[in-house]
Image (cartoon, rainbow, N blue to C red):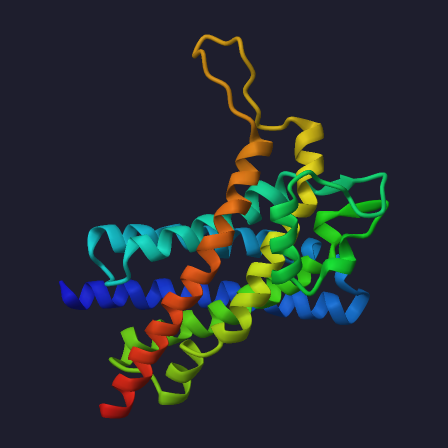
Length: 252
């Protein structure tokens, strides 16, 4: 049974690895060929497939196939799926008439100022989420992170261990990739807010037979607010994991 489990996890990790490698290849090719405006069009389908495949990681944790805590896996995968499907796929374009896309959520905006180096990119008369430069930073950050991670676990499942260089990359690349990825996620959600509000897509209005209402705009605001405590918490958690993993490798 253990051999079947390892074989399955090896196949899973290497399959998703190749999916993310395809995403990175298409993204870099599009950047070099025609610029950041064409990155999303180039990676859309492989990005959706590779990111959605991560749902299985939650199931792996629930049934005990892996030791990763679901409490750490679920927020990361959930936020990425929200950006992939709930923002980029659902809301391709945002228009704003003022130069700074004003919003009443000043605390949220203050967080954006602190967390992102892309503030100047919010100045616009017409923004398209799919052609925004933040898509490029998002896709590259995600794909580099996942290529390293899945190759690390795939190698461990195949050979029982991974090279020290790969282990170091697995527990060190996030130092750069996590802040750039999170900043891109936050920026893209923020950019999409006004179009989400104007379109009322995915909203449920009263009255209805369920006597229930739902506003996707405020749900998106809630997601953004979760990033404020969630991002530093997750970063601190990963720093702790890095310290333990690298210390363990030195004593092995």
